[in-house]
Image (tube, rainbow, N blue to C red; front, side, top):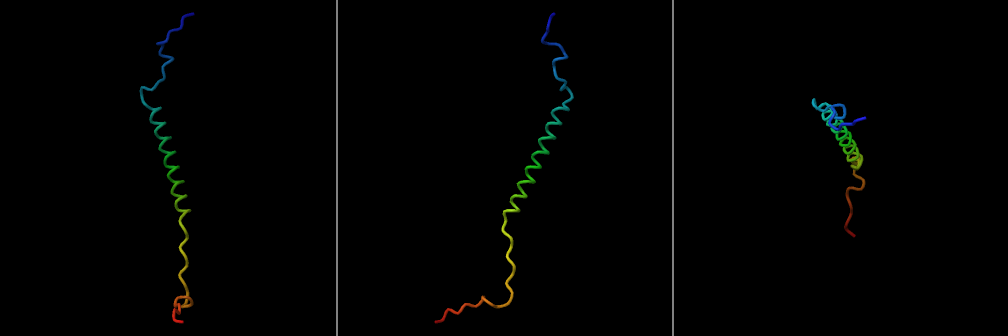
Length: 65
């Protein structure tokens, strides 16, 4: 039984580039998902804006003794 290295059956069919395109699409999708998660983490880390004070209580401080 003879085995030859250069047979066309052993070489992957990458002449049309569809494998590379699929890998690039998967990588792009992964990067977009990671970016979305990063944005959600940044937004979750921002402190909530405090409510505006109501009335005058506590706004004037008497500093005269």
